Amino acid sequence: MDTSRVYLRVSSKRMLLSVGLAIGAIQAYIALMNIEISAIFSLDAAFSLISILVGWFLSAIRLRLTVKLSSPNASCSLISCIKARFLGDVIAKITPSSIGGEPAREYYLAKVTK
Figure 1 (spheres, rainbow, N blue to C red):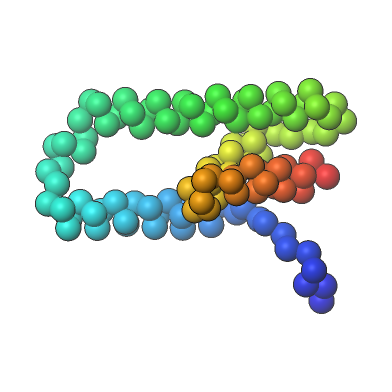
Figure 2 (figure 1 turned 60 degrees about the horizontal axis):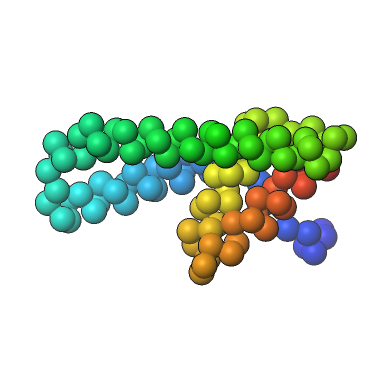
């Protein structure tokens, strides 16, 4: 078996696990800090969440247009661009100075577009 190639796969199971872990961490934080539930579900929090999701979606559209303009022969779906954007953001949060997000995004799109 060739171990020189490392494939970075984004599957729905892994994404659900990541979201589940994030929600669990948030719930633990709420429980430990005794935060009121009404403060979490305020209009400001909902607006912030919607703004972040819209920003990710617009960023994925921009990424798809960039892929199409830079390489007309490459085909990349919007879902692939959303996954690449999500992967890049997660890696950027883990690595120092957000340096790891772009290479992870490029690697995923290179694998998807071949």
